[in-house]
Length: 224
Image: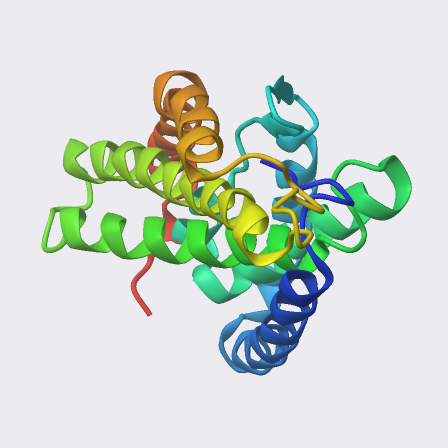
């Protein structure tokens, strides 16, 4: 799902950098107010977990990759704003040190995987698990569904961003300057592998970790 350099035009990259600057500032203020001192090490571990799970990626035709992210799991445990920070740290380290995702595309990659995915997944989890008893399996099922939908929402949005580039940036003769694939190719390419493969990996990992922590560390799920 990582967008490499050269696939998004300057206007698109600049837009997402500007948008993410506002989101990062909001996230830092909110997390500073809401994150408990004893949760700070968990935030660091969450960033490391997201970094590791994203390193297991598979190339997708067209220039991107398919992989799990772990963003919904972090959102369930610490909240979506904390997940935004944790996944952002993982993505920036990957881009700067490992070349996994372009530097010019950090803003877009962070919006897809550190904003859309954790927020979509978090509220789906909350909606499905609402009023469920603590020991109910509905919370585990909700976590799996949230992970699956959150990852695919981010993947489809990435495909849309790819597919808009030939329309936004092209020569007078109509030749694409950046990503050459339109929506009819980019969206199915991104959605297909995540709907069929990586979404299920995200769902299983998210559900299993939530199930384990409910038994071994129930304090993660204390309301408030």
